Image (cartoon, rainbow, N blue to C red):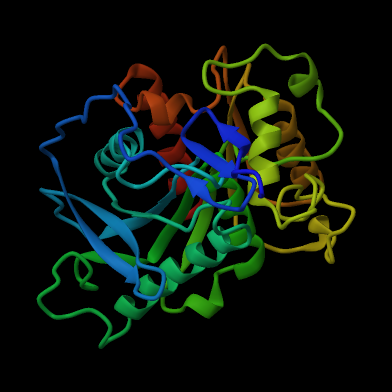
Length: 325
């Protein structure tokens, strides 16, 4: 008689992978995060992928008087957890919509280990093609005032991602290239990577010597990669390491739109993120790097309605103005 399935990977009880390949996700996660009641923003959900039953959430300023730029926001969670509906992600998107005066689009994506990479990146591209369909003459229903070309500016689209969402934003930048011609008439102007979740088999100094964070440590980082990468692959896989020795392309030779990279000074990923920005800048890419003193991973997403959140938004606004003329 065979043994019963047992847990082989456990992400703090939020995701449990069993020896038979089954996955358990509890439905009653206690976030202990209040939803911010921002009366200046309205929001609604839309399905963008019928086959995979994926939804996105739209956020729109109530009193917009001009055509709104579009800001995509891909949530973090190590490719294994997270949703547009989680309170921290919802609050962050409310704040982005009000602070940037933009239509914010927050797509969900398939999660690992049920759906390993590149599923998340594929879903991100599908969500952008959903927007492209609505930017065409017959793509948006006439009654949909949220997505009509008189309401939003499809020529000013920005991609933003937090942690694993920042990793996804990087891969979209590389895949779509300058001006994102395959998405026309949607025009992506640039990418905001907030502490992108990159990896590598060699520890950086901040990973090896840094203090564990309130919600993150190197063991959890390793577990995320084991659960999210294709089976048998390690953190030097090109989907994890942007400078992977296994990449088919030399990243320094790839052309893509401007990138703003944001990190916390004391987060575990700090050195890997700073190295990414520095190497791209040395290669002549339009990259800006901003570091916030004394901050851990996820500092904006966890407290967007704060003085620090205001500073982050100001950095993003200034950068958006600079690259868009």
